[in-house]
Length: 325
Image (cartoon, rainbow, N blue to C red; front, side):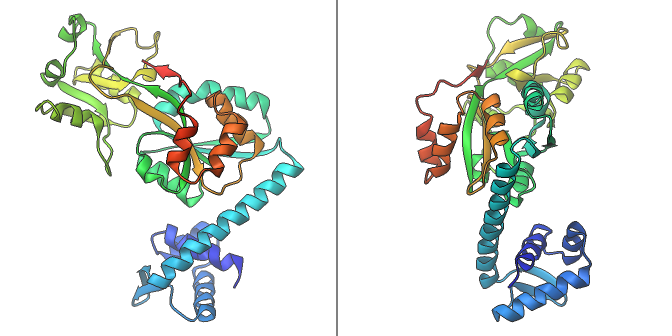
């Protein structure tokens, strides 16, 4: 059994059981990958995949167990290589981050600027996506860390560290009736079309749940991943915008009225996460510390040793997190 065969197995699963797509991603020929897969199955003495003709459909029960162990082996191999790189040159490397548009646009720019000033020889790759896409990128090893909000159930095999909390705000044009409202209620919001973020596809969504709890059904005119897109459609009169507090710029958004909605919707927690068992290079630890100063190396190392996410949460129970209101 060769390490490269385990890489091919993982690549095939990541490619949706499409050998051609896996081979293309590996920069290899499809026959070469198929041959190595056959050699691996011959050595193991059982099939790893359920087949429909030549097509791979899914992993067999035994294949699933092999794949899980192969992922651990590949993670450990990656960690050993990272340890070697860090020992030889701690100032050079790459940092791949998966995050949402709001974090990339409004929170990370000063953090990355400061990071690049300290580590000019570290190349930073920023990947934006939904929670589902971020979880997939992190699980497959395509990124080193993720910065996201909520959806923690999608990151079961990861260490998630709290960064800061935030609330939603309502935005309207200055001539809108809500701009002069003394108090904001869900009933008042429900009277207008709403423009807000795309809802979580695999779990509860706090915004519609808040309306449902008081027997109201919101009129969702448009959802988008991008806060700038939401504000654009608010400006053209499509509806009332609901965005993250940090997504408002005093200069760029001076034509809009921003209204506190912290009493209407629950607060959110933004976290930084990485896969369990990963070796964090020194510059990765420094990036997390710059993003959230309470994430010092001692706390992060303790979190890495914790047996569960509940234990990790307990490590930060006494920390007063920064807050965007």
